[in-house]
Structures are given as C-alpha cells and as structure tokens.
Length: 142
Image (tube, rainbow, N blue to C red; front, side, top):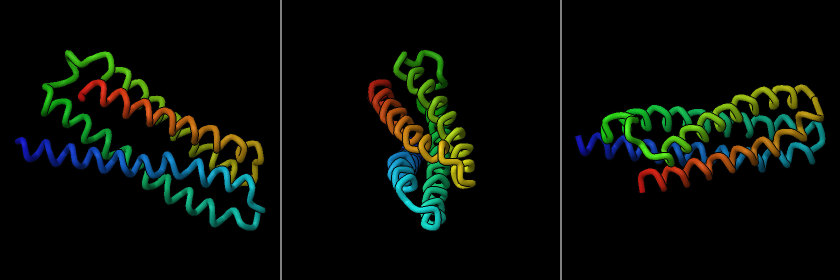
C-alpha cells in the first residue's frame, strides 16, 4: 500500500507540474496575443489551446489523486486542518477561473478585443490561486 500511495503522490506532483505549466504559460501567451496582429493570432491561440489541454489533464490528475490520497492515507477529510479546507476553496476558485478563461478565450478567438484584454488578468489570477493552493497544501501536509 505504501508503494501505491507513493505512486499516487508522484502522479499528484506530475499533475501539479502540468497545471503549473499551463498556469504560468498561458498568461505569457495571453499578453502576446494582445500585442500580435490578427493574422498572427491563430498560432498563439493554438499554443494557448495546447497549454490549456495540458492544464486540464494536470487538474484532472490533481483532483483524482488528491481524493484517493485523502482517503487512502488519511482516512477521509474528517479531521483535516483549516489549511486543507483553504486549499479546497482555492481549488474550486481555480476551477472556476479555468472554466471562465475557456469561455473568454472563445470570445477572444472570435475577435472580441475586450476578451483579449481580460485573458491576461484571468491568467494571473490563476497563477495566484495555484500559488495559494501549493502554499496551503504545504501548510496542511508539510
């Protein structure tokens, strides 16, 4: 069982790495989108879509492995610290941010200039939320 939970933790960290790549990469792409002429935007959108796919896979891994580890290593969420619950709240907020970014990205790709200007701040919010999730996880389990 120890080997299994160690592998789950490894997968959890891989999910974090994938999510981090998207969380830190997409704001950079978003800033470039604003400064790029319309004919150059399709290439940047394809990069953003690729990063978003990587991030979604990472979030899926994080959620699945996190739930399994909470039950297998800790017997469930009962008795978890305030830091754990803060982490969960931040995770829900990050999921909402990711869903909203996907909606705004579609509008931006269709040419909505206001949506272009909204992508970078939403991406930065995702970065802040991810950093908060990692910090609260360290404080909850460290």
